[in-house]
Length: 371
Length: 251
Image (cartoon, rainbow over all chains, first blue to last red; front, top):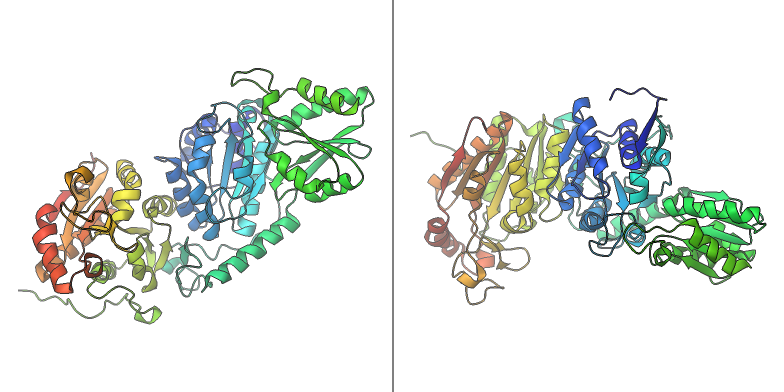
């Protein structure tokens, strides 16, 4: 498809991830089939080779994340996408990307779990995405779009943040956002300048200073003079610690909706944030003072605004399609100052895997808490 | 007969970067010097990216001034795919051990060949996991005693993997060979295999593979002389040397 900037398309969220990557200057995509994100892999297969960009269908998600490691080491913008069990397989590689300080983007289209769970929507990878699901305890930014347009835009932001911090960034949607069609405006977002990737491997003769580069997933363990500079394990930990602190200071993103006078604040991300918004519109007409904080990044998490609102006595209701994962972060923010309630996956409207958390369940809980 | 230099350090061996770290009698430095020699001969030093994912092989990334990568155990092949796809004009070598490639990386190995990835893999086969203390590997010979086959490998533990023969059956493979360095003749043959494999990549034909039978006196609890004898009397009969595939085109 030949497309011009500013053009509007009607596409599903999984395709919007691809358009976002294209507009971010992504040069390589690696993927393995898994539902409900196959449209992303198929989009790249269709659109990347014809533009002279790299598409690799790997033998597994372990393969995807490690091919991504290699692609990112060359300094190219590269991406993979996955869901559910594939996300599980990528955990070791995520940890190695962090150790090797490689920028890369991973889109995670959440489905139900545990195990194979369901092939449809869910929000059940929150903790493994925000808590460093692999070995060794690491941090990575997790962005959470709630629309097709945001899926497109947040992939561009993710590439920028990955390059800024030399750390992997996750764009976390869910099967519902992935499968849902909405209008998409194609646009290239400018987030500012970035440092040159002078650490990348490209063959010593291609290095401007003629000095070799070493990209290692064993930083802190194996000395690799003269690049990179870490000679000991603690040197590596200090650098990573500083990086995580900087991300926590600078990269918290959230959106608020009617929280100024709210007595009850809903916290939700992704599809359940849209569900919650419907419920809020409904109860506002009846005079209930309910608002919403929607994290756009779930790591780093907007603890500050939640802490502030809790200190004014606001009560909290978390709406998420899991047995309760986001709710743990809200409890950390509230620090026991007020009560925190949950409308979770058990409130789905239908017992099959097509069941959703719908506004009705959120309304019921609001009435229960406020009437 | 033409005489060739088989002693002294290759030009690319940047000895000042690190002391050799291998155990006495280890043959990793021998395949390392073959690799350096061939890269030097082909004049591709400046465009080489050398990826080592073998624990005992880290000397190869420490002793060269070429661009290097050190991914995790078992992942050197997938990482090479990422590098080569983005930098098709670079020369990419993935260097690993037998645990690395025949065990944890076997899926990546077979699939890289099936996708006809255009880079070279060298597998150093010492018949066990050396760095972790000498446990059984897929390549362990029948009867061989390791830390996890204390009575010797028996049929209940399966049979030794023949990686060079196996990968030769894959259509995407352009070159597959097995060499050793138990004597100067085999050393020179191995050097020829490595050069042929590298040339396949430079000609953009397909996946190239060389397996190297490597003595490990420490892991095998032998003297260096005994370990060379073991290579000759046990390994080579079970894992014959030679070329298993050498094609100009994959069609």
